[in-house]
Image (cartoon, rainbow, N blue to C red; front, side):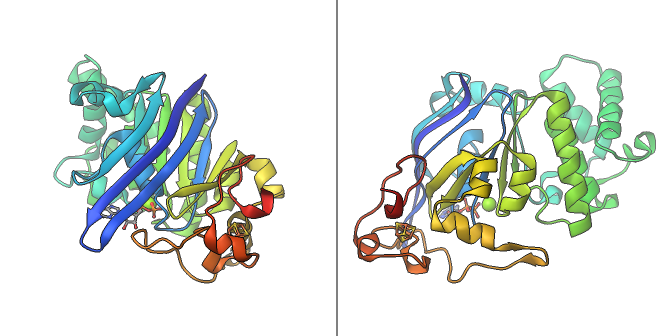
Length: 308
Ligand SMILES: Nc1ncnc2c1ncn2[C@@H]1O[C@H](COP(=O)(O)OP(=O)(O)O)[C@@H](O)[C@H]1O
Ligand code: SF4
Ligand SMILES: [Mg+2]
């Protein structure tokens, strides 16, 4: 059975400029012990999908569809029930670790707080556990560093702290939203490597959000490619990496080169003014007449008229 199953998720924001369709019928599945990468350029709606799972969407969001986690529909749970699941069963790390840490508490206090929130353990026990966790995420001299404040840590070390907090209660699902995008290139690989090791050790399923298909391929079993609020291709990562079918997936792959990212021509449309037909048609090198008029359906894991 799927650990997480998202069915037909719609998230809209009514704005002065029109309705922002951030998630427009997204369906995804993560099986127990498997990992899924959600890949796409900035502005495609990836973070909105993650925040929907965590029930952390802004107040003005209008949401419909179903998000089943271990069978329960997260969208119909009360605040208390969702708080129980958040942290203990599903944890999330974000792009900017600094904004998630409280500047006025020590790092050690923040990790032990995460341990204590759901576990009935003493201060001493939770502090010991915090030090263990710091060691596990590769923070040197944890005994000393647990008494320091977030600003005394580099970005990479702060993200290690966030990982320690996220894994404090061994959740069954970890959502990592662009966890290394704000870090130096040399640090990025180290953090990804650490995540990979810990996921295996904790037997946690990973939902990784990234704009880089290369990073996704190193970390995950499965992939969903998202463009302008829709999933346009799904599959085993090894297969999609080798035989991409959707022109957008091909473009994302083409964008990875040894010297960094070569951007795709054009830009993601405004989600208030989506193009008719296929949303990718203004940028697609293979667009035909039908693409400008008819919105393609998802068929055999790809949403493109070329594969009808
Ligand atoms: N509170 C909000 N009100 C209106 N639009 C929003 C709000 N939050 C996000 N959006 C819009 O939703 C779209 C998807 O955003 P996001 O999920 O952050 O994309 P990604 O993570 O793929 O970069 C963006 O166009 C963004 O501007
Ligand atoms: S449906 Fe047409 S425009 Fe859209 S990706 Fe396929 S070929 Fe390109
Ligand atoms: Mg995002």
